[in-house]
Image (tube, rainbow, N blue to C red):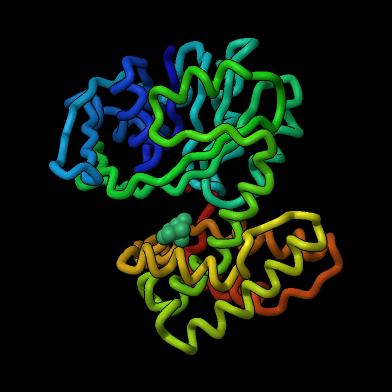
Length: 309
Ligand code: PAF
């Protein structure tokens, strides 16, 4: 089986490594020719499994092409940032084979349902992962913590997809209803990401600093109200407890949004808190704490044209 991977960040490269490890082949898609040329100098990616008692590093060859010339795509993994997902998908859409299988794996919500609705004829799955991965150097990905990846169909019938992927991808779980799973990840991201960006702190401080924790509790209450109104079940315990648990087990991590703000990159705020606020408006619920965060984080990120992202 051959997979095209669009979004060569840590999660895209982690999947490329795991797919190659299982004997599949991959093509990494690049949006600019400089990045493509830099990758092609070695044409290899490396996967280090730091979760093992002894670190294990393997190198794998990967084909690489430009998004404008990807060749025929039978299997597409889309791991871009949420704000780039729809544009990235539309660039490669003309190259999808008639029965292509598409898996969307990014933080936030909005693009998954938009793409599924705009393309009812396509087989589209979405997923959510708790894997911890980072790039120690360009195209050298470290799997720092083994989490779980849940995937499920939005459109179409791809019953074989899970069976084919599951020997390759660590801790892969098939979800008959993926939307509540995406909501659970969204709820955690709403609680942790904007506050770490605003306070410029590591995840753990949100659980230990009483002032930060109080703000997180207000955010969580609003998120729970919206989820309840939409009939989404979040966690067995209150969201604030679950969010504090995640902040504690990832205490020394910088959230993706905190890193984006620190590096002056656009953030995923509109697909996280922005999506929550949109859903709140549809449900007729006031979410002032989340609205305020949305405005604050938007101000922290650089003004960018979507083409630059
Ligand atoms: O976006 C992130 O950084 C992660 O999803 C999370 C759960 C907040 C942990 O850092």
